[in-house]
Length: 233
Image (cartoon, rainbow, N blue to C red; front, side):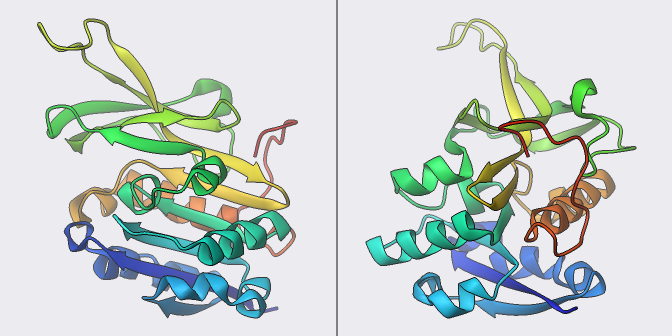
């Protein structure tokens, strides 16, 4: 059975939306997805298209959703369309509170710009299919400070170091990878992906592709399942 993925990309070119999403289109195709690419947010007003879409992969930074676009996307996810993406393409995408509630987080800043930091797989969630068998790793890139929702099922974390004489004098634990449910839809997010070097890191690429596949409409295949809990993905 053919599954349908919609890749929605655009906005700020600094996050190379075309090139970044292009890294994962072959993997989606290999997993049986027929992939459509859109560079216009009005695609979120096409109710028939979204109803037939099993997965939306979004990479759109610094955009603006109209009321119709926001309502169309949220309604589709609530009805079962999966939603997935990474970095600013999700949490620095739109100034829309309903959208923020759906994705479970909002970008605030990346102190120090590019820094070296560790990503730790949560031992309690190490059996989740997105991170199963993966080890923690170290990156030198943007470390996101976000506002996040306690409904998120956090799979990996980091710690922002205290800034000497700066605004935060204590270490700040921060989610890096999470999933969540929104109605019947699955949501996957990873904070990693400022540039292509981040996304082609072997572990980052593996968990991101697994996350996209996991988020596909429940019952349509992919890397779904694995340790479900009430209120958790």
